[in-house]
Image (tube, rainbow, N blue to C red; front, side, top):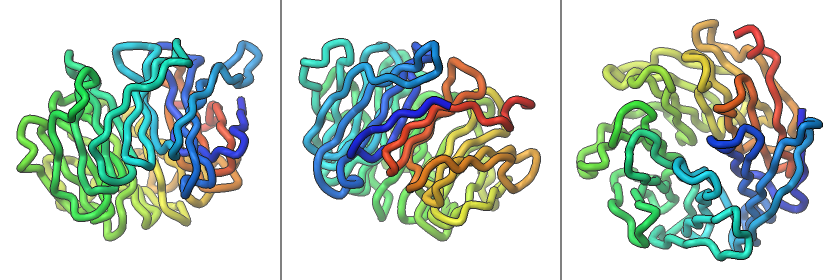
Length: 315
């Protein structure tokens, strides 16, 4: 396992590069994101199996999420507590980021489209809205209203163009068409705040949600009267979930109970592996799409880990 310490910065999000298997970025905040600034770390896995810092980038407010451009290997987008988005040119550390400012409160989630020739990104905010952006424009293309509480997560479908999902503190999952923002499909998925959602990479109708009730539920969006699977075992809220890019039934999760877990919903409702290498809330999670079975996580203990869970070796 490779580990990196982000001194006096608490981890919120980690993402592997889709272009370079050894590169990753980490979004962090000072004072647990309650006050102070944020730092974006660009890290690299060395041939010796360690993590080294390539550079860091400073922002005056806490950074809560980060995502790589899907068209440019040196560009990443971050989101911050002051409601702004920052587009960073990693190859030019002295260059100030391009900023996008429309949200009225914290931006907690961002995502970059993967199914369109046009490059768009989403931002989900505590102002209860989701916005669609073109990185070449300063103003958003559309604003999506409808959630009654803060929006924690919004993600593009990896299979269906023009479609994305969002989840909120109001307990609902909404499915949106970017061309028709006034009529989302809405259904209640938890009797609690829904903190994360993710699409299956192999089945376009399968989406999973996680919530502050410590549950993960899988849904067939063609028939959402009841979940098609439910995973349980976390003792606290599940902050983030992500389907494996290599296996249709495998997911990873990170939780406020300090754990990272691997699940296979075809093998049962309990985790097939529980990893306990953090001493604080675990916030960030990502699969390496260029290296089978490798995961990164980060948490409020200022640690970033890159590792290969043993349960994935037999899958």
